[in-house]
Length: 422
Image (cartoon, rainbow, N blue to C red; front, side, top):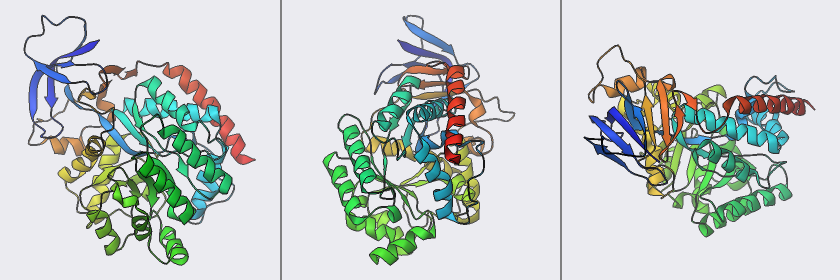
């Protein structure tokens, strides 16, 4: 069934033009929207009165970690981490090794709900569960499908748990890519051998995909690469062919020299900025210097709120990146260009968000970006349409029983935390 948004103020996400109109939203992948004057003859539609509200394209997450969803509120790690490597070892690698089927499902369902209620209808995720690899991506995909959120998934292939786990990660990736759009995930340069990188790139080429990998998040990544391969991380990835695909995503990219920045700018891969995670881990500030404009924003599993990520990008950009309002907005929206360029499905015209933003000041095309940075937040997300289907109505998820899922999720979080203490 199509949806009619009557009395809407539509904001074109590319031009920021404002248009008072009625919008007919077509259901299905690659569905269209149509602006109409007279809707009296339109039949078999769900009607939403958008008077006083703003309608624009929904959002998308450029880099997420479903597997971190049950971490909120968990106790301290067995050892207090003293550096970035120990943060991974004692917190995140302890957590991901503890995940099982139910925990992964709870993580995916709650993440999909959180993303949708914050206005995102497409998520690019980077998953890890070393002791439950086989079928893990399908568990996430099914959960996202239930909620109604489109996705681009990958499994984080790594050598840190031994050759058998590496092969399982490669197999899970190939099995998933046979029937789904997705990426080839690698953890980071310092946890993958040349042999594993070559296998991953072969999968990338075989399935016309890209590599999704953490890059120079901490100086340790560069030091390890130089000591073991006599080159820097981006040089290693470039030599391996990772940068040759517009589908590749290089996450973080904090500790780069000028040559590495030029390599990224002059090749095809996109960069995913994750400000809050970088600040939380005390690994440094992102700089876009000489990287070009293929920069996405992600949450790195810290939360599922892309409006919050955009604000964080802007404010941190005042310190080192000289980022203006428009620059922050363009990074926020660049993920749509990535999806369209690579012809992934699930981010068509009929993905919309309805904002109940009752501003105390005038809002129009000329000052919208000021409202975007200082006014609009996820609390203003009233309704969300994904592939032409209403998945959030009056701030409530429509596709699943949120109360039951949260109850299930809380049960799994307790199980996870107990398991992590063993």
